[in-house]
Length: 199
Image 1 (cartoon, rainbow, N blue to C red):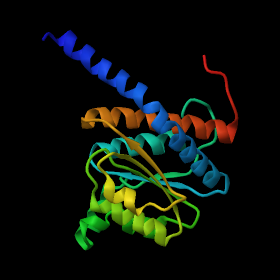
Image 2 (cartoon, helix red, strand yellow; image 1 turned 30 degrees about the vertical axis):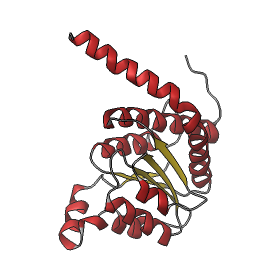
Image 3 (tube, rainbow, N blue to C red; image 1 turned 135 degrees about the vertical axis):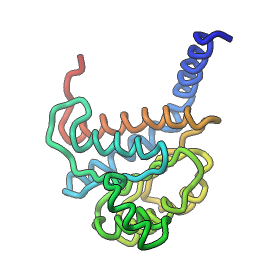
């Protein structure tokens, strides 16, 4: 197989995954954007966390909120829990690594905030602890996950939202999760600042 065929195969897999995922993800994408938009309208914030490659996705999401997605508009309050290596190493030294997100949520989260957890692989205990800490702070929770995240799924309450991506390979999961994040950001902007022309 030459490299062109391999590349074309990757694109084809991504296209097929996107096409078959629309029906399953459209409603939770809409619910997530509504939940976050309502929190932001009440001057609450979004706290985002993820492990491994999901850290990059959490930076993408929080950056799109703080800066802009496509439309020039005021910044929206979002906090990426992976943003301070000094905080992370201090927490790691002082307590269990599973509490690395939970302790930050306990310190910074407030009632009405939204926790946005991203998990493209297996469930990690630090995400489960983060959700538990968010509940203690009376926060809503959105989980962008994959089909194997049963532990996180079982923790969620009726009013929370799970966006579960189904794919056999983690790279495909990350690709689709990136698209989900972009959709949510666009819907939030439209909800809070109105429609705008796209050229």
